Amino acid sequence: METLKKMPSLKEVFKNDFEIGAAVNPVTLKTSEGLLTKHFSSLTSENHMKPEALQPKENGFTFSQADELVAFAKKHNMKVRGHNLVWHNQTPDWFFKDQKGVPVSRDQLLDRLKTHITTVVSRYKKDIYCWDVVNEAIADEGPELLRRSKWLEYVGDDFIEKAFEFAHDADPNALLFYNDYNETHPVKREKIYKLVKSLLDKGVPIHGVGLQGHWNLESPSLDEIREAIERYASLGLSLHITELDVSCFTWEDKRTELERPTPEMMEAQTKKYEQLFQLFKEYAGAITSVTFWGVADDYTWLNDFPVKGRKNWPFLFDANHQPKEAFWKVIDINSNKFSNE
Ligand code: HAH
Image (tube, rainbow, N blue to C red; front, side, top):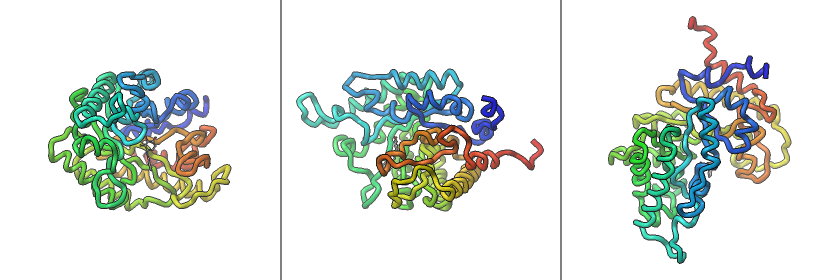
């Protein structure tokens, strides 16, 4: 406890720059309570606000885990970023079929989408200040703009604007985001830009772009990240880094045998985090939130992705919840050592 008290707090140190957020689940909400309340000003549910969690059966809404997160955030004066309303993954199949198993029509599916979004966004109107309305709708490869999905197939490409309109109608004060990964790859970056720009041109209520930030020690480069930030910021929207983690493995590196990170990995990670937060600070006029996709190295979704069961250590706090070297470098960026403040 004593050490926690003496430690600088991330959210305090960056309070004039951006929110510092963490994704949590019902386990980490308990096991990481100390770190969460000390360092983080915003919470996101890792899984429990996704369509399959909130509406596993038609009109069978299940809010208890989401409610617990919201209650925790309220108790500790934290904001909540909602994730997510429309996605091709973790969405139950009933959305797309009628009771006989026949694919639904465009109108039926839009009705279901509207019910889902209206119910969820209205329920948390006072508690959730921003939503990832649409997650990962852009195609990674090929000439197509949009990823193939049942949303695209059954509704058509306006499923995206409909989702934003339903969310805006349910809570006109909520900040509405488009969120995606590989957001720094030049080709996908331009596709995301094109989509968001077309939404803005049509007057769709969209307020921000979420850059997931699932990055690693080598890529993307700082220049690629900077270019992406500048490109999206040129649309005049807020940017949120929504799912930050710095994996110890490049995409090609499929090793599974490491039980702990090597000193070289930790050194490279420290440097990467320092550079990242310098960059985020430089663009703090556009970036209003930086959320990590977890809290500390004792739990990360990367332990199963993309290699099942492989350990990874992507955060600023180690598996014992102690600050890593990277934490201190990040803190140092804003320590105002040479200022008169
Ligand atoms: C994210 N996809 C999702 O937005 C989040 O909801 C989930 O919990 C974890 C990661 C990232 C992703 C990726 O980086 C590469 C391929 C597919 C998905």
